Image (cartoon, rainbow, N blue to C red; front, side, top):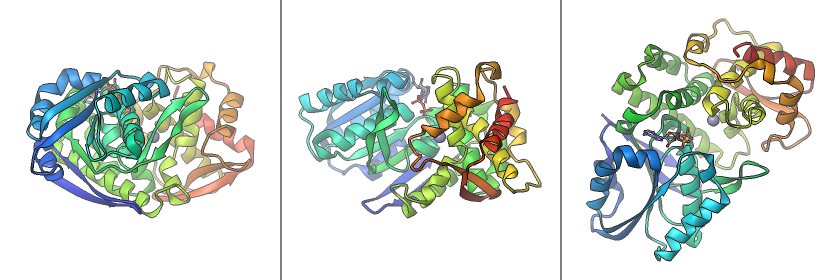
Length: 363
Ligand code: ADP
Ligand code: ZN
């Protein structure tokens, strides 16, 4: 099964391909039929270890010369220093304006590689090959690229759309369990803000044996999530309005990640807890939910932080310094009902503290 989604943004149109073992065919459809002089590849170190021979073969079919740079795992690679090393790699090898940069890995490699593509020679054609579930459903779509600064995550970057995204689920065979959970949280986010069916489809993960999840349902799920994100980004590429809905659970999540110094809680774990808190805050501000669709997924999450080490004051303070905040009040993406997100300003700190309890009781 092979799915293709068209993404239209103001600046650009491109396709996202989703399927199992589709890499060669999708490259065929993307790269010009005649051989390209050079192809530049940025690849996550772990993906290289597991999958290089097959990737190499698929790429060699299109070029005379493959230039490759490995990206070490972890946020350290999303730095100005490493971005600068990538510039050395590209420029010292005389990259040209029309030479595609192929970026293979999870969100770290994708954000870094996207930013490198955006900045080298003011823009190289970018091909994203996401290899984590999170990157497939979220970070490879939408054109956000960037690196971190000491002052905070993702503070340096730009919007830059790829030529193609190729999400080949075969890469997920080697994905560690914790990384599946990271992707699941974003999938549940799309369910909460946009599509009730996703909650049912996501039950394939409840068996916990993620690698043997039904491949057809998995491809459908990834496709649906990409469509939702593409649809939102088409309407609001630069996050002036409804793109904010994609931050459901994230105001709380970013505060949790910051309070745990980005090393004891993963993004996905924080987003799941953030969604519990956001749902709670929705109820505290007037919504009524007949059913709790997140509930059955709670057992999949285990945490390495305990609530004794977190203070409500500190968490709320981190929310005040979130980079997405524009005014002095705190804005949240809440749910009027399932699949009806709204952005609300909440001034009552007591309510926010109460909302946190839904998340912290999980720890
Ligand atoms: P995210 O997509 O969640 O932002 P990262 O880019 O930080 O994730 O990748 C998470 C981890 O998974 C890293 O250690 C990375 O090397 C590893 N990784 C990425 N893709 C794969 C894969 N297909 N198989 C095994 N490990 C992978
Ligand atoms: Zn997220």
